[in-house]
Length: 341
Ligand code: ASP
Image (cartoon, rainbow, N blue to C red; front, side, top):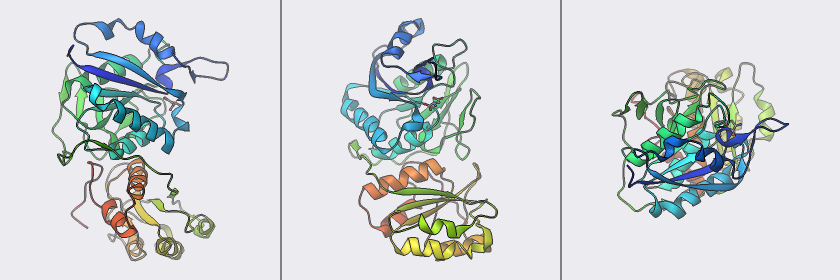
């Protein structure tokens, strides 16, 4: 372990925040001071590490495409120098960043573990200490060479993870894929769906600023109000539907809007509001017309993964037809295609 060298990439988030009059804020240089106080980081069983801090440090609610590109770009720049990467990140949008990195770090063959905490390291009872130390050990072990999220004892596939709790210390889960590892007395790696490795060299594929929208349906939704949003300017839409892909009114009011957006070039991906389970278009009349209108199934993808995947595929410059096909195909372990479709 001590021969392994880990890059700690600090992007912001609660783990390294300090108190201010306006609540917790990130502070440059502060995490480095905190780390000096954690004696476990220098015991013989720990890998060596170097801290890189992105500037400005951000509350993750302020992260978007340019920040994902900066994080991915930094990992690409340092790729050959380290055995693994631990990205310290705010919890609020960690699952979006993890999903984005899983696509943009093409042919990744090193561990990239995102982690953070619900309680800052500077406070008593901080969960940051274990999240950090265990993430570093997992990054050094190199058993799982993909983008993951470690939190509260569970190592999750990054593009399957979602934040489940605003205040619990086991804040993340991946309801459609069992954890990649569980950290109890020992760190136990579990057999799970593998990512197909292409054998091609690692490559960084940054995202472009593609106009993407997420539309969550609810009982009584007035679809006509969304006419103004669903214009040709919107390239990708994630439709968060009920259950297995159902929309109110058997599509009557929504279909013309979807059809218009589709013929204007948009790719509409149907995801479920249920955290667990899969979309199964056509299982009910309330969803079958979505397919005829040009929508594709997101199967069991999280909204976070579907959003990131749309950014990725549009940034690659693929045609609408190719993007439609790839949205329904597993690329980096983000989706399990149900056999019913
Ligand atoms: N607002 C914080 C962030 O996402 C929350 C956290 O880190 O837990 O940056």
